[in-house]
Structure formats: C-alpha cells, structure tokens
Image (cartoon, rainbow, N blue to C red; front, side):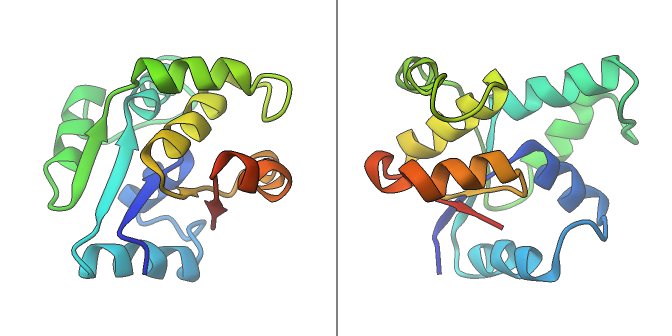
Length: 142
C-alpha cells in the first residue's frame, strides 16, 4: 500500500462528486491509502485549476470554490500542499520532456518533490512516467 498519493485535478473532482468516471480500481487505491492511515495530497495548483475551470464555466460545483475546497480539505487524511519553489523550478526543467500544460508539469514536479505517485488518467503524464519515471523518481498510477 502507498502511504501518500497526490491527486490530479480531474481525479479530485471525480472523487468528490462520486463520478462513475473514477474507475473502481482507482477508488480502491485511494480508499486503501485512507484506510491505512495514509495521506491524500491535493496541490494548490489543483485548487487554482478548479477555480479557473469554474470561472470559465467549464465545470460547476455545489459550493463556491473556496468553500468547496475547505469542505474537501477538512476530511481526515487530506493535505492541501503549497507549490514550493523546488517544484516550480523542477516543472520548468520538464518543459521539453513531460507535458505542454504547465499545470500538469507542476503536478508532476510536486509528486517528484513529495516522493509519491500522482493518481491520474492523463495519458501524457503516464507516458512521461513510463519513459522518464525512473530517472526522476516519478510514478503515475490510475
């Protein structure tokens, strides 16, 4: 069992909403982490991405963004992690290798910095993990 997982933004949204887009195996991985006393990390980058998506009308939440995040963040075993300067610098260094999306590069770098897998269904992130994961100490799991 992994004792710490970092959630990609879409996984966070689907987990909170109970979406059937979240595969049972992924849900079980997250639940096993919780049951085992592990920590589910949510990056401040995901908080920002959610706010941008709501503002653009691409997603809707049942609460204002700040209240929605507060509700999620107060669950036991959830930790909202800030974007540290090491991850920000690492994300820039990944620009040719990982992903064109800066938010995704920041999430990859945060997972590397925190030494934990990133739970994602993003095929480009999974491809990066498959090619360069060993070099960077990075894993993507679904």
